[in-house]
Image (cartoon, rainbow, N blue to C red):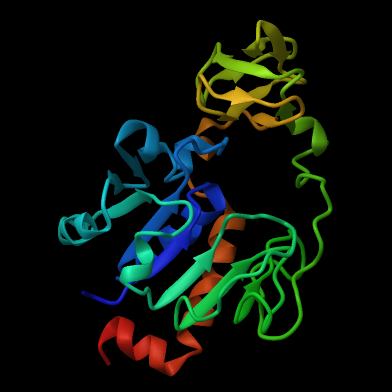
Length: 270
């Protein structure tokens, strides 16, 4: 079994990390839930859970049903995605590195013996307690920084500002119910256009822009849950490429891996 890095989570930030690691010839396994709630599905490996196969920036991502199938996917030059939210299948083949990219935003215990190096992304992680190293995910001066002691900045609850908009960019479910999408990711919309409905209640665009994210259609959501994302910049290319934030975080993860000689030697056979 070749040494590999396990990425726990297939959302857009996790996928940006995966792109960075894949491009330096690291074998990856992405772990997801049976029904991912990612919104930026056009740049999320979580899409493979729904479609079986997806592609992001030219990199193929394939859903597998059993851990053993990952080897065949690696040999094809693709990245396997396994639905195994509790890491039950992954325990038999210990990863060299575990990247917890679930973005829980609160402290949760994590077994540091699960991998030779455990890296946590964002709030909720404290180096030496539930990870070996933590990476800053908050936009600003420290984005992508690796902490070998201490913790990343706490969750602000406020999305990053784009032009004059911050929290307005994010669409939330007005009530509990099943989502029906009325447009696709990448669609240019005007203020007031209906983007989706939840149990027949409309969710409209808050301003002119492009639909950058949509939760998968047919998901049964709770009231207040994030279901979409509108970008005021009328530039659809942003919908199909990893964000600067996710790539910066990926750079931090790569730095943490390279900082450990034993990990580095195992991954690249030095």
